[in-house]
Length: 350
Image 1 (cartoon, rainbow, N blue to C red):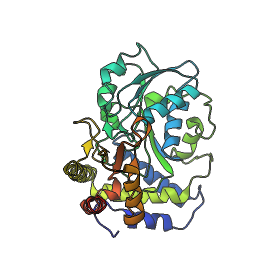
Image 2 (image 1 turned 90 degrees about the vertical axis):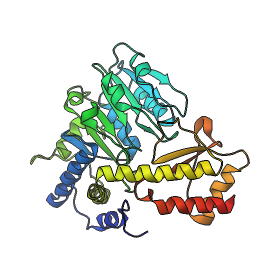
Image 3 (image 1 turned 90 degrees about the horizontal axis):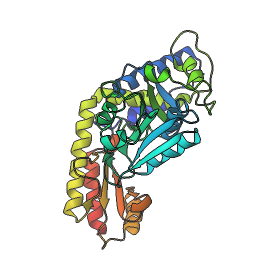
Image 4 (image 1 turned 180 degrees about the vertical axis):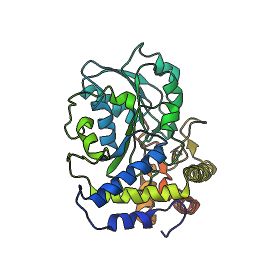
């Protein structure tokens, strides 16, 4: 695909094609600092410790928990899909007493129920945009009820595609991934943490690699940077370019584009006999979940979409496996032409 709104691939490709530099080279450190600043703009935060974790979104999840959860910490997690469940696993491995609050798949996390789950938790966590169900939960409403707890938000599928406002909402720790609405290949986890959470860091987290006490000395931006690990130079240069393309388009424009394209896709699916899975009023524009009609062999049609049309559609996970499709229109793929191509291919197959 060529250049166009929401299609940062040419810029990202140029980012990856830049000459390799040493991870302590002053030129690369300038790129890293600029990348961190661009992330602050996209996160809508002034948090000093904002940077791309060297690892995919799952590394973002782990760094969020292991640095503030001690053995015996009480962690309340809202679970309305696969990734809320993973939060529980990570918190438990860090020694937390996990209070799991389950919600029906396809429904959002209820802020009041989450707040009432424990009188004084150390951490409350939830997924903003649940990738397994296509549901958006109200992070700001949960933040309003967090009390003295730290709030961790998984924004892997939301950052860049729908409004995210870390400071205004009162989120203490958040992480994302590069491969969703940022339109950059996977490999980094945009991350941000505020001063309130930094005051509660575990002195010696379980993970050396993800120890914020150590990493802060490298990404902090001061003249006395200390070596921690070899940063993935090309990945960060690619993210630098992708964030530049997003900011050139404008966050509001990106959100509007994702909404317009997502609405078009949902309309087309309903017209073809599909039922939308996510609760009305909480449906993600960038990830549409739809119940496949019984008359359709969902696995075979998904296979043929990929092999015959080069269109990949995700299958359902967990209790909705074999019943639901997950169709992403994220980043550069959030284009009317892509939706029209998908719907035409679907018509051919059906």
